[in-house]
Length: 120
Image 1 (cartoon, helix red, strand yellow):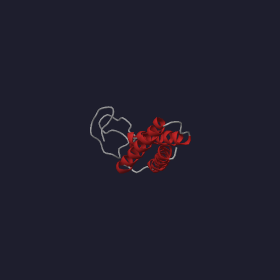
Image 2 (image 1 turned 120 degrees about the vertical axis):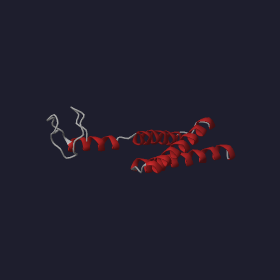
Image 3 (image 1 turned 180 degrees about the horizontal axis):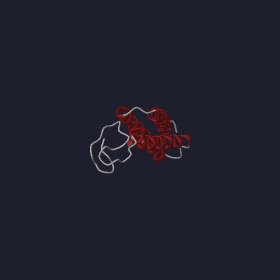
Image 4 (image 1 turned 45 degrees about the vertical axis):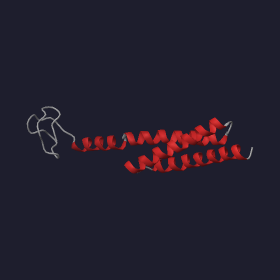
């Protein structure tokens, strides 16, 4: 560990720097580094993917025209792809939920597109 006051190398368990007497907090620094690791960009991308998946699901509830349905299909596919990529990097419960929501949005939009194209 490096002393924040004099920048000297000190032991990880030191409470005071032996060079300048500055008080260190090794437990607090460990907690801060763990919090930074938990708030990684992966989690932010997971939230964005979930939002896109929910938007795809909402579009599938209100199918107005083919363009909107096609955009719902693209959004659902994109959100599911992003969530799968996030699962590969780092497993989050949010990624699993996103895959489910985006998958439902994708399939229901695709069903609407097939229905409008071939039945109506």
